[in-house]
Image 1: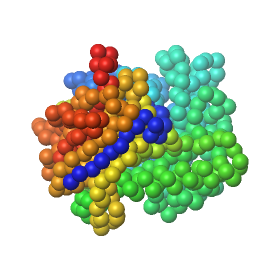
Image 2 (image 1 turned 120 degrees about the horizontal axis):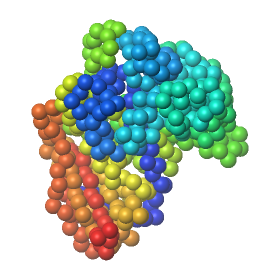
Image 3 (image 1 turned 180 degrees about the horizontal axis):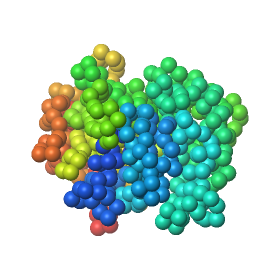
Image 4 (image 1 turned 135 degrees about the horizontal axis):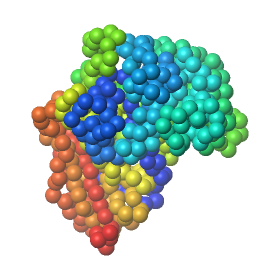
Length: 502
Ligand code: AHR
């Protein structure tokens, strides 16, 4: 099969905000305990942080990590997680039916972020608590000194403020599974007042309003309209969450889910812009896609109720999941003019690209690699390629392009990278890329993941699914030709010819 892509610098969608390559750590299962924090682990540093985990997190080049939930945050007392560890209470976590020992809290997470070269995106509890506790944690974290909460932080050994810039106003507040779930009007009011007071405490912060829990949630659409209409003037972003699964074992439909994602993003942008128009405002609300991933392998796995850090939501990802994760992130980049933040949910052990054994080893899951490629090479601006390829029909969708692609242009480094998924399960695609004004650019690397069965997975013993290099594609008369293997993930990196030495 043949396909064509046309690319030019003018096809610019927008500057990529690096926070689109964010991730998420929740107090859930073994994400914190046995994941990022395990004082008895052979690789643990003086803070109890696993160095093997930090090494892999750095490979992912994650600029921002959302914390501490997720559903957990809707019952969390942040004060339980600061101060002398021996005084911290153990609490029942009603979100996940476990016991939270509070050995790890705000200051530990901020110290971990520093080591992982990431910023913190902090979520406040707008379930069982409200604006008062939310503004207190902003003061605790960001106020330099001379007030009750900032001096308390200093007394906890943290002299300099954390200066956290990004704050989530609760989590999935329309979900019946959420502690103190709310109607859109109830939530809009609480979110507005919390955001106002948090910004009065520190006017440099940005806040994220909770969008609906998902596109198929009954309140989706109306929730965004109602709650954003109330909180518009104070908030900066609205959140989106989306997980996909292949329960029906229908790979063509599964790989086509990015079309649905596209529609979802488009709808939320329309809602934001409708509200902007309605109030004749100059203020634009952008999107924070702060939970996205494949999630279905681990549903309903049994565990011991009220235990501490049991293995929960530990999906082991297969090869086809890696292709959908690549397609999903490509889709987010196609909207990088409006999606400023996105968080792969989550980072370690819990539906995550990094998997550890408590007391033992570590391995990168299949989904680790497309994310790593995009996060490392997909910086600068995103270009919308003109893709001309055949399409397929499947049970859930019609007219699904076999090729899902995006290009990114790093002007400073004079590098352009093309990322594409070949969704054809049987056939190679001979891809011609018309380079137009990238004519002086030459390929420097062609990486792919291919040749795997859809259910192939990685393990502690064997990283069976991982990328490999291919011979460089040829360029003839400004047309680059690459052979994309059936059912594959592909990264073609180009650099301006006379800039090799940079
Ligand atoms: O990421 C796992 C859970 O999924 C989060 O706690 C919640 O926000 C979502 O429903």
